[in-house]
Image (cartoon, rainbow, N blue to C red; front, side, top):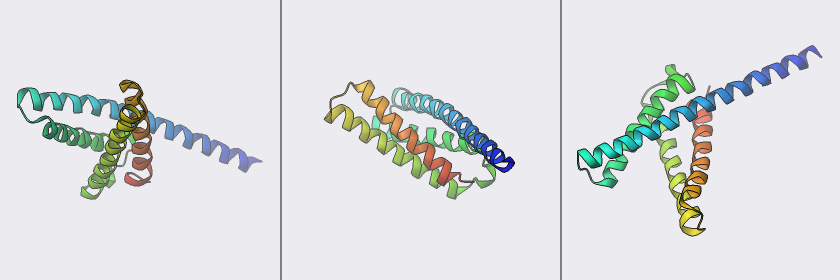
Length: 141
């Protein structure tokens, strides 16, 4: 009986850790979104860079920020940092961006949902992808 209680406590601690990591991950993601939008506006409005090039540039700036903050804060895996981890992080980010854009296309262009609703649905799926892949592949313990 004592052993059962111990494993229940361990499971609860693990669940709380995952929730805490997800909340931190979401905060980093929201901040990265602001950096992405600010960078896009800066590159297009002040440096007059073509909007597609500016979007790619702002995406990589925001993705690098996400990599830094997730490795230092969300997943606390500073010891793993390096080129290999950065590449894995960018792979996950790029697939997540593809899921997001594809979801927007599916729900808005093909199915006909309201644009904001379609974006929210697409963002939900890409966020779940990004969190799972970051937790279990990029920053796995």
